[in-house]
Image (cartoon, one colour):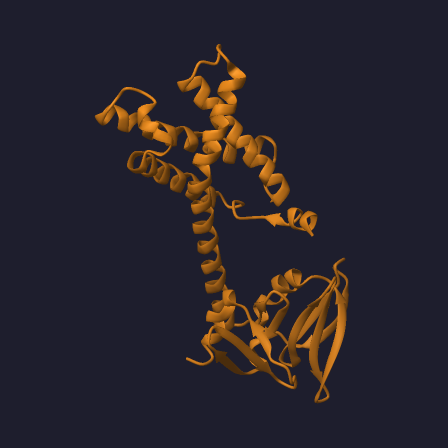
Length: 275
């Protein structure tokens, strides 16, 4: 299970705009945090005060931002790291932390002295200091991307492309069958397969397709068929009603007795049906 998680795609920082946002948030957050809260008694590391102390504390955040600017742009281009798995990005982050620590040693320490001891010391404080602003930046980027994804899905619901037939491809891109767009009801993820539920001659039918729901999502987003849950996609034209029970949201589709759950991520899409 752990290995599977580490092999998942990490795409939060694939876009250049998100990387610039990461660096900006870390820079601003670090400068404010170091000067306001002065963690690790950092203000006592040197006998300075006033504007000199402000500039020194701020320079720690600037060093972090400059390292990330280097690793997230030229260094990624040099090593052609255009996308990451979670495990490879964790390794990349460790490299970034190591570079920040080395920067601190050469700028503020004595690399000719006890280098190993200084490196351990620098790594400890770099790791502790970077956790909060880095996590905060990733949360903002994640939230921004989720909102953008929801807004994009809403556009496709309101203005679906008209298609008579929807062709379903397997994981190798081969067409296995086609269904009338108006007769497609919902899709359900089943291990390495997707169950496609559709209406044929007035009755609910089902076909198994070896593929992933993620691929189906990319293929069907122009046909008013959208993700509502980690395991489900529904054709919004065949949604009969939406039921809200506290924070839980469930939907009912044509010719299917059970309710299909809607996760919180997609709830705003389906609330449009009842507001």
